[in-house]
Length: 491
Image (cartoon, rainbow, N blue to C red; front, side):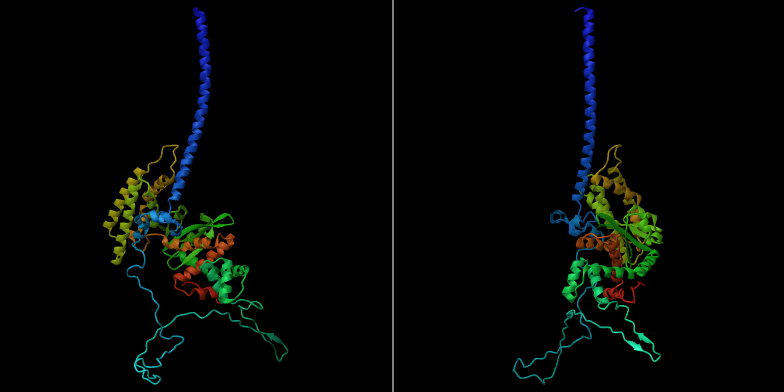
């Protein structure tokens, strides 16, 4: 082959290779794009798997889920230490606490009825003892309730003719509104069953029928709830004003369902007052309640919007303990999470001991020591939760660990505020207890039919809870809602 022919052959071969190379580059570009798509899908699936594993691993020891939701296998498999950390953090064991007063049924000085039992014959000689001397009396009392009965009171108004020729008719009492109507006591019983014991309307109507023999429709029960809510308007306003002036208030929120949409029930409360409100999870809803003009310290779970209200803040340590318990299952975060749990529990025990000694705060030395240990653990947590490379996302417990580490560093003094002032609480459990009944209502009776129904239930629950906190007669005060006396107002 001469030189020209060889050059031509090489050029043809080069053109062929260049064409093949272009095809391979195009195919490679398609494969790279496909690999990118698959990597995105893998990252998405990894994230979903991490979230699902986190959900499956949650129970009452490491989240806000109630103990009743724990599966039997989870209770058996979970170690006692993990199951009881939050309880030990509060310094409490199971059952009755040492030093708390016991509760037993005691005899009364003036029983309603006295029944005397005397022996008829001597157990030795069989002589009749009717006229024998009484040498000792032993008394036992039985407490019982009479069979519930409904009494019917007929009210008659007279029309009388005056000497001047004018006829005047008497007025019926305010509670007598129809030719035949139910009285305040029946209504109070119904409201108590619906809003204090969480019976669904149909079961409440059945209970009233079984106990009292009265036939009430569910529509009538709805009307009684509406009447009670309207009568509580002044009560809710008074409680809101009092909460705005309290030095320390607790705040929290929880979701409920209504007509396939989510509602949020907000609570603002103290040891003596409860204020529940239904709305959205936003600042507009919060500002409608006592927190909108609160002048004291707010105890909460570090939801961002709460930092916009009040003059000070205390963060809930019980929430942190649950979150830290969840991290114990992750070897990457186990050490610093365990260190924080031990520190929080130890700090709480020091505070309890100092309070028993009538102190109002931990010593400055003790507080500095606690904060130094806290900062060391924050450094350890930061090393275990570095910022991920650009384009890499965290999922599951790794994401939670990073957020928790940042919160522990940023809000250290708010978590430890109770060490410098024993008037401040360790946790926000008071607000959680006030909200728990909302969840119980949804669990027993299902979702609310409308936002209006949810709001009415929250209003009545506020009244019942405040009555219970102040040891007031709940049924009597529910009865007053249907009389001219009106709602009881807290002092």
